[in-house]
Amino acid sequence: MISRRGFLAGTAAALLADATGPSFAQQTARTRVIDIHAHWYPPQWLELVEKEAGANGGRVERNARGNMVIVIPGLSVTFQPQYTDIPSRLKHMDQAGVTMHALSLTQPMVYWAAPAFGLKLSQAFNDACSELHLKHPERFVGLAMLPMQAPELAVEEAGRAAKLPGIRGAYMSTHVLGKNLDEKMFWPVYEKCEAVGLPIFLHPTNTLGADRMGRYYLRNFLGNPYETGIAAASLMFGGVMDAFPKLDVVLPHAGGPFPWLLGRMTHGATVRQEVKDLPRPPMEYKRRFHYDTIAHNRDILLDLVRLVGADRVVCGTDFPADMSDVAPVPTVDKLTELSAGERDMILGGNAARLLKL
Image 1 (cartoon, rainbow, N blue to C red):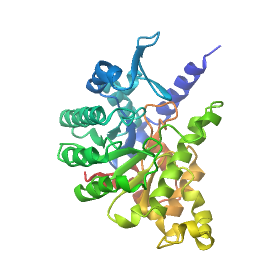
Image 2 (cartoon, helix red, strand yellow):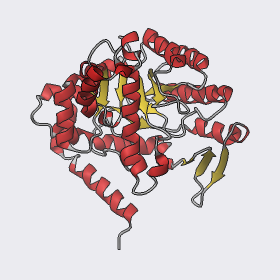
Image 3 (tube, rainbow, N blue to C red):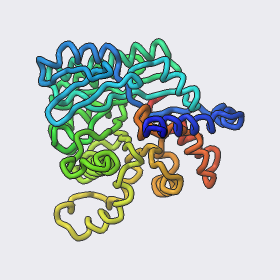
Image 4 (cartoon, rainbow, N blue to C red):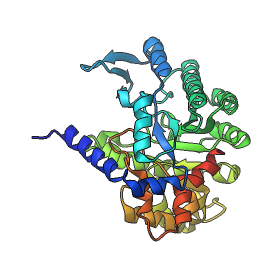
């Protein structure tokens, strides 16, 4: 009997095999494919975690396979090799027809740490991304980690990171230690990112309602997209998107519920006093955001493109998670209702514009 892990690995391999024939090679030759949603733990970042996390609010262990595990309040994260190893990543990218990864951390990020250590962890990640970019300038850029638990330090690091070779954006959780992203304490960070031209890529962590979503992997299936919706709505209703009109924000997982609830929120804005100060109807904010392609369904992705425009959708995979899209080029090329030019924009052109490549 094949194990679940074996079944998943076999399925992924089959999908990749389907995507690597001659027609696939012809498809990828037409455009540079840029994956804006790809996670990486640099070895030097892991070394810093292992060395100093114990004195900064975390506990480091090793599991039965020898993988490092960090335990912090409310979260335990195992650092698996596929999140770290660059040669195997490059091989996978080549098989999938992906030219470039825009690299970001994933859980536990850095907000759990005391501010000084959070800054140190952020700098270690950002420096590692820049070093990797210099080694592989056509394959990797970085999305800078910022210690948002100390906004004044985040502002400083955004300014520093923006000057590093290969840093092309900033990376934030959908909330910061339970605080929604419209809190005024975070506005100086948005001001800095706008000033230095760093688009912000959001990603969920420590999802709301996780205590009710322990079964059936609902914490990921539902919790992660819900977090994205809360973050986007907070930025919209809280005035951030109006205060910083040149700030680009990318929503993961195809925007979660946010694009599909814009009609409901637009109606709500006409009858609820809580949002009466919003200067425009919520539906008019749909193009103030960008959305990645991780919908895992052709019709839903096509509906998203029709709703927000092909120029607001960017290729993303969530590599190397088991919830990733292992064949992003066929995902986009199945949208045959779009023109070849529109599909090229989604696969790489929009990301190249956002990341100033």
